[in-house]
Length: 196
View: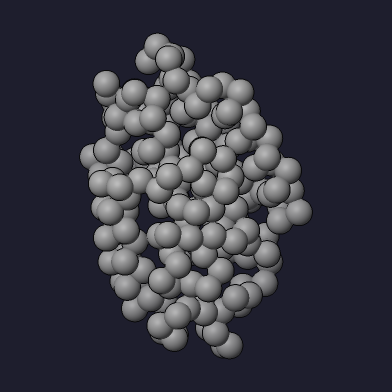
């Protein structure tokens, strides 16, 4: 969690900053614990059996719906409020559709990064990661959705990655740097984590 939003209690239980959820849990820490357990199990299942799709925005939303559908009614739906996190302001709500269309059309034109040497592949993955991070299309669960989608995309292109081998603090720091235009750290992480 931890987003700063235009209306801090939007989509939350009255008088709290806890997102309305299917378990009717009104304590943020308890919700985070249950959410982590459910999404960990779902991410593990996706490793074994990825969601079929064509690597478009609908596919991306389907992954979010699968990961978070047991927790939130709005899983797989574009957020309705503007959000920011750790000083990074993400795409405005009214820009998400257009930006997503451009991002995923470009991915298709680039043949989903297939048949590339590793250097070109890393450059394209870093760029795609940065764009989808700034898109941040969902109210919650953007990072987990992004990692699940990227894992599938990377494998489809003939490479491999295991995000569980990447230090989460280092990835977070590199992501914040990349949001400010410095992608060196992110590139180094992906160079070390992606293999044939």
